[in-house]
Length: 193
Ligand SMILES: Cc1cn([C@H]2C[C@H](O)[C@@H](COP(=O)(O)OP(=O)(O)OP(=O)(O)O)O2)c(=O)[nH]c1=O
Image (cartoon, rainbow, N blue to C red; front, side, top):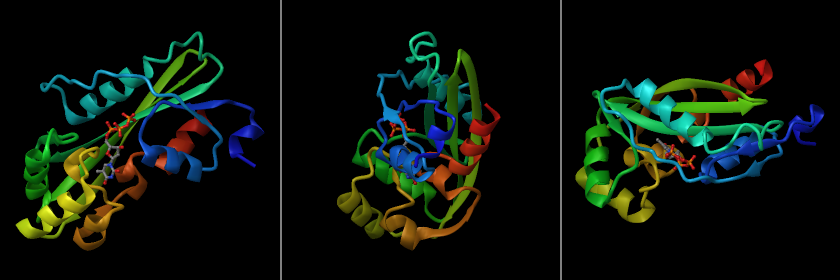
């Protein structure tokens, strides 16, 4: 039985990401996916935490609090921050190569912001995970890009794919946060609501 039926609160996931859908399913929830178009542009002057939160909140603003009053709406956004550079999804293969070349042999932070809306109230939080990559050769990066085409992923990589299995040296914090949704923290925040 889905866990949220205990409280009879309908849940809506406002995300096109198949990873987020899978993670929310693994949390044991029954929910509906509704995708709304969102402007993901951001002000470069803001901190990465502010930017990612701003985008997650922008995503939830597409769900008006009257029509969706009694549902719990969840949206999220993930970015990678490496040496102060904010890496979102790559524009093309060239940019994806540059991102992976920057990430290899170094550590970076993955930030996922989650926005929650329930009965007219908006709540958001940011979860951080530190990830370190072993050095990767140009050939390995090209092999990954050619075979996995990770152009829909922040930082141009999926920790759940080949590159994660062979290239990740260490991870501090939530693994699921890197994949797109900090499940345990989200569960705690939902309980507070
Ligand atoms: C770093 C990393 C990101 N990702 C994914 C998570 C997100 O789906 C994506 C970042 O893009 P987002 O813009 O956060 O999400 P999205 O466009 O896929 O979905 P939506 O905006 O509708 O919610 O990158 C992985 O799957 N694995 C990883 O290791």
